[in-house]
Image (cartoon, helix red, strand yellow):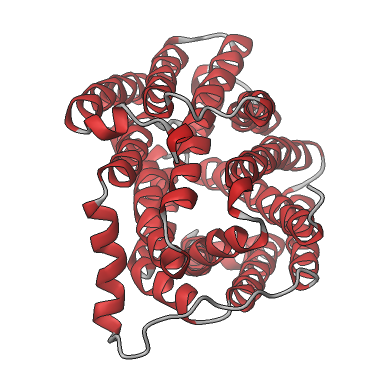
Length: 403
C-alpha cells in the first residue's frame, strides 16, 4: 500500500466495482418487479455473458499488444455511457416501456459485457505491473479485499436508495460512481508494455495463451474448479426471487443479501492479509470450494432472513479463499508477456461461472423450482470439488511456498 499507483488503482477499482454492484442489484430488482419471472433474471446474465465470452480471447491479445491503461480508461468510459442510458430508460420508463418492453435493458447490459470483456484482462495484467513479484500474494489479497468491500457496500447502497428514494436516484448514484472511477484511473501512471514476438501471427498469438493454460494442470484445475463450482452453486441471480417469495423482504433486504457474501469475504481477506494461504494452497482451495457448496445448500433451505444472511456471508468467506489462491497462482505462474491472454482465458471461466451461471440459475429455477434448483446447485458444487481433487493431483498437492 506504500506504492502510490497501486493505491490509486485500488481506489478506482473500488469505485467502479461499487457502482457495477449497485447497478446489478438495481437492474435485477427492476426487472423482477416488472416481470415477476425468474427466467428474466437469468436473461440479464446471458445478455452480459454472450459478448463477454465472445470477445474474451481477442481481448487478451489486445491487452498484451496495446497500452493496458488506455484500454482500462476506454472501457470505463463505455461503462459510464451504459449507466447513463439505464438512467435515461428509468427516467422515461412510462414512455419507453410500452414501446420496447425491457428489451433496452438487455441491450445496454450487452454492451457492458463488451466493455467488461476488454477491461478484465487489461486490469489484471496492469495490476501485475504495479508491484514487484515478491508482493504478488499480498497484492492479490488487497485486490480481493477491495473488490469484496465494494461488493458489500454497492448492493446495500443500491437497494437502500432504490427502496427509500427511487430507482432514478439509484441509477444517478451509479453514474457518479463510474465517472469518479474513470477520473482516478486517469491518475495512475502508464507502464511500458512487455516485449512481444513481432513475427507472431494473430492466430499464433491467441493460441499461445490457450495452450499455456491447458498444458498447466495447476492453472487449469484452479480455473475449472471455480467455473463449475460457481456455475452450479451460485445463487446471486435468483436472490430477487428469494427476497420476494421466500423471505418476503423488499429491495432494501435484497441489497443486504447481495452484500452478505462480500462481508464474509472481507473478514477472510483481513485474515489472509496477515496469513496468506500459501502452504497447502491446493487443499485450502478445495476446502474453500466445498465450504461454499455447503453454505449454498443450507441457504436454500433457510426461511429466516438473518440465518440466510449469515449463510451467504459464510459462502463468501469460503469463496474468498479460492479467489485469493487462484489469483496468486495466475500471477506467480504466468509470464509477463502472456498475462493478458492468460487473464482472457481465465475470464472465459469466470464469465461462464458468473454470467452463464446466472442464466443457469434462472432456467433451473423455472424448471425445477426455486429452492430445489439451489439445493441441486450446491450439491453439484460438492461433486465438482471431489472430482477436481481426484483428477488434478498437482493442484491438490500445490504448495505455493515452493515458488
